[in-house]
Image (cartoon, rainbow over all chains, first blue to last red; front, side, top):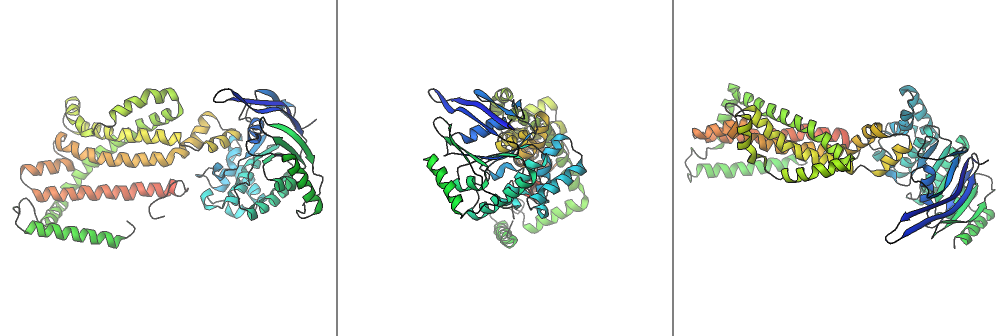
Length: 247
Length: 256
């Protein structure tokens, strides 16, 4: 039994002249605490797919199950991190951003503060708890967003190219941090990206989507031990394999 | 004013030009009093304390009119931003009423409310309501969709979403609307007082002084009106902005 189960997902939207099929018959499962990357070119529907799992969009066909239950909308069992730094609330400090989901759950003020601090520590940002988002760098803002998505303890973490807008060095750093955070929290992760090296670095398993309409082209399992050596022969071999599928 | 030195220079030069003009004898000194006379009259008004009563009345009318405008305008703007049918209903009315200069309503308001406070307050209310409505409406519409998505994903919905995300998200424009509304109120109240006020208010002082050819009183009061308007803009509105949306990096504030 998979933790997340996508069953024959199809998604159509009304185009200028006729209905456009964005996704067709997508099925795969994600195991408990598994890290799955969904990789594809821009326009292959990977963000749409993530939005369906998140509950922002209703699939026109098929269904998503989480923990055996069909997804009908948004829910606190899923945490979401977007690509855009602007996802943080600018009028709240880093800590108060992280507290948001806990507030919605009705957690007391004191406990909220404690939990928020703990998750800020997890992403190495505790000293910046009192900073407003605009005072933080892009990488720091994304770390706050990760802490915010984890703080209310969802079992699933959904990430939509969270590091795509960062410079290469910061991105490497963030990927290492994410692997550590995932190692500690053991969330089930679906991570959408178009970056081949990133997918091979992060994923237990990679699902490759091809566009028009978005369908699953292949799946690759990456059994390499973490932390992964990006210069090792095996690492490069997996990258080559992935690129081959994307052509 | 980032360079106070430059500002001082502007005032000194403008003052000197006026002084030269006033003393040139082109007009009688009763019509163009010198700065010394104006200052002396201003001093007299301040010492007698009457000017403060006038200022008090003017500010009181603004406070009530502007307060009511916010009380009415902010909810209407919010509802317009939230519900399409409210927007469709209110927008045509606002579009037609808002461009009418508030002073054009003075005769009508005098007939409705009589001479005095009520007419002046109604005028301020009229002048202030539309900027508040329009800015609040725009503010709600311009709330970043990503904030709404993130908040919804964390379980916020309905009223909670509105209070915790839409309201603060719209704040930069709500404050901008408040500022604009104050500027328009200030114009409206002085104009309104000239015609509708009977005994008190800065506008009344100017209009009353005309009867006795007291140009020094008129110009002195104009100076007071200018200083107060600027003072409120700087002290209250800029501070409000700097402490809230400026601090949050949502707008650039003067001097940051």
